[in-house]
Picture 1 (cartoon, rainbow, N blue to C red):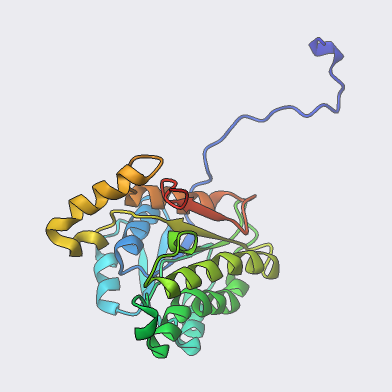
Picture 2 (picture 1 turned 135 degrees about the vertical axis):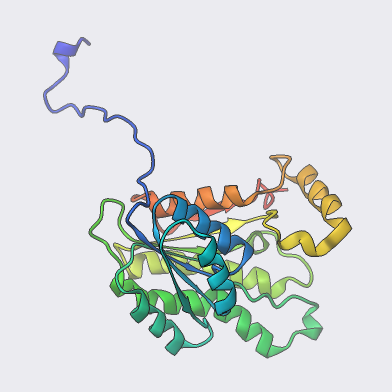
Length: 260
């Protein structure tokens, strides 16, 4: 077939473009005082976004805000309190993207679990995201080229449960199904999840001298033969935010750890 044989209606390939930028977008980061939340806030700010920094500890949020190159507003929020989430929606107003890294793990042997701790774990990973969508989805800017999105954090424990991690596995798994339901319920707002494996965000510093051995052991078992970095997470979240044809999806950022 020659060029002259191609029908007039034949689709012409468009040039590939990079993901749409976050410049002049309003991004809400819930958990902006945490290791991962701070990294996401830095990345979004560097990309030109206006930030709403939310979380339970105003001091940590102010610390993050002071590090950013662009505008940022601090709004404390308690995901265990629906009134607090409603107040966040009011303070935020119209926004483009929301990402929540919130987690309150209730780890330990099944026999030692306290129901109050289990409730808090579900509040952070399941009830909180549900209520964030309830109260903030009406403010989402769906009339932009990349649309509006929610991105939540699940985790590899849902796909690789382990003893003393029953609640973690359950809440992360519930969130993975919640994003599918919300993607249908609040469409055209997009809803996705990022599921990290072992990522060196700084949280593992608590292991002290044992940290290096732990990360090395993890890397040797992963198909990618490495552990994750905060850059891996920020790339995944940026993709979820700026990909207008992606919704109801879990992005596994675990080096294949769930398969090993």
